[in-house]
Image (tube, rainbow, N blue to C red):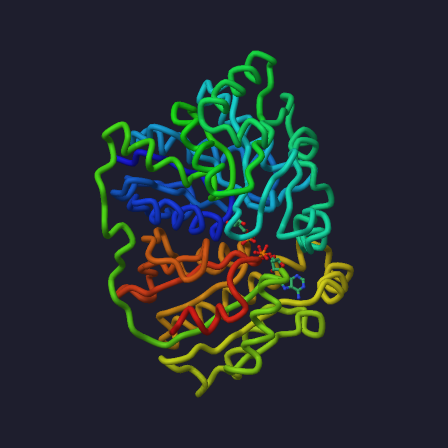
Length: 420
Ligand SMILES: Nc1ncnc2c1ncn2[C@@H]1O[C@H](COP(=O)(O)OP(=O)(O)O)[C@@H](O)[C@H]1O
Ligand SMILES: O=C(O)[C@@H](O)C(=O)COP(=O)(O)O
């Protein structure tokens, strides 16, 4: 029976969260999509949806169905995981999904905290920073699907919610769990539905986690989960586990597929270009998924290796992305590239790739769905927020390792480090 039931709005975000929970001593399994059968055995089950950019009504319906499955399996607390850069549109989907979950859980109030200090995401006075920059000057203002042009999260969440949004400021969070609990009571009494919680350090996240031990719903990035396993240990529900991230061994050919256009991924592709065989697809010149798949198939022949990866990327600079979007429309451009990369990933697995890194949240969603993966057991971290996972797709029933990398995560040498 899972202690913690989680709903993540994309697949890389789900592995990021699962990885945090494994590091804090929980066995974690990521389930792809709303489950139709019994949930796997684990301390935490993370249901990974691809609901960040779908129509609001569908995101709400899928999230509620995931919540029902987790509650039916016995989950004692629900966590709604979204991006540490609060990726969303004016219409949602963070606000509407959080409000629907809150209503279902009779929660009344929930905190909202995407902070992830290890990866440079901090919140001060409700404003989200990425490293030294405000969110809207961090590159996220150019995201292909969810351009973030306002760093004031109280305002951003307020625009997406029917209920009102408050703030748990740094001065309160700094004082620890008791002060946070007190502030939450005050915010509830003031009829706030959500409050953005400031957090600059892991100690702040631990205090927030402790303060929310009895909240029916918690919302945030993976960082907000840091303090939760300790709550369950304190309650005597979670035994000490030394091997929470143990995975079955897997050998085989190595590859990377990249569809993220985020700064970190563009840097990782830049480094890989000099060190391993790297194919950069040009979706603007060839806006046809089948042709792009064919180009990759011809190129990869004879290049696959078990000791070092090949890299196949569709990622473009903001100017190239804008040009393709102007030609096809934003959603169609994204869908075309996702379809191409999913087909290429299927070809790679058919060719014997058993250790595959996928860069990009939406891209990972498309790849995992194409491979027919139903669940991922979470292993050790390569870089903060990106673990290796073990999956058994229909075309590789003996099992393979997959790393689903959030676009902006990972050091510059991530694509090489992952296989070393
Ligand atoms: N050259 C390109 N032009 C337009 N869109 C692209 C291009 N390359 C990738 N994309 C799309 O951009 C989106 C990137 O989102 P995602 O995979 O979630 O990355 P991230 O993790 O950086 O957010 C995907 O929908 C992908 O298909
Ligand atoms: O919280 C985060 O930053 C990640 O877990 C995440 O959700 C990133 O999404 P993508 O950049 O779309 O992979």
